[in-house]
Length: 308
Picture 1 (cartoon, rainbow, N blue to C red):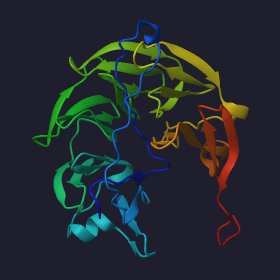
Picture 2: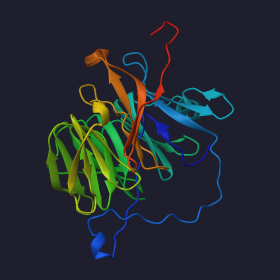
Picture 3: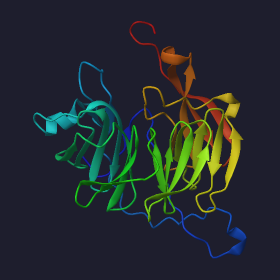
């Protein structure tokens, strides 16, 4: 197993990198750091998928799919005898040396070595039910909860201070240009990490968010995308391509499907059919930000053994 790998929870979030420009004409643009010279490529040995599992029957799990076709089921349990994730694991990510698994109840936050999956810390009490984790640097991260947001001290593997003024359910988050962006059903909070305080909010009806490779924050509202410039904090509305909306993450919260590629300036999400508890997502769509082109059927799941 390699130290840096990605998790798929529906479709996982990704991060971009930005810098400041000295050119006054470009002050409203999102400058991007030039790519470093590539280092020697170390091929991945496989990938991981975190599973919420079946509520009432088993706790969350993570499976490891090797490139040779073999699968290590319940990989965290295999690496840690007698240890499990919490109930309904909905979010997993790698940040630095650690893997973070966030569950709604029970072992709400499990921190493991990113290379071996050996347990580093387990938290059953976060002050609320777990939602997601986002790293800021090698010292600080943030955990979203059913009733707010709290910091996480990565150096000491300890819970930190809560963000004052936020007591509602918070879902996905991302970090850019000194600010943490955190979404709730009715607000997007822009949090100054230096002061751990809310500096600005957007109001509306929101589902999730992510950051594209060019640095833009893409907020999935109920009826449109909102593009936010993390340098100026200016926003621009964009209709969903072909009216294919990004589904809601609320009710029984889930991490959602919206994600951005780290290799190309594109977004992915799933297209829902049906509504409510009967809604299903079998089709992945792709939006190319640079060409403004949309593929409404990038990948479609086939039928299962029952023909469904």
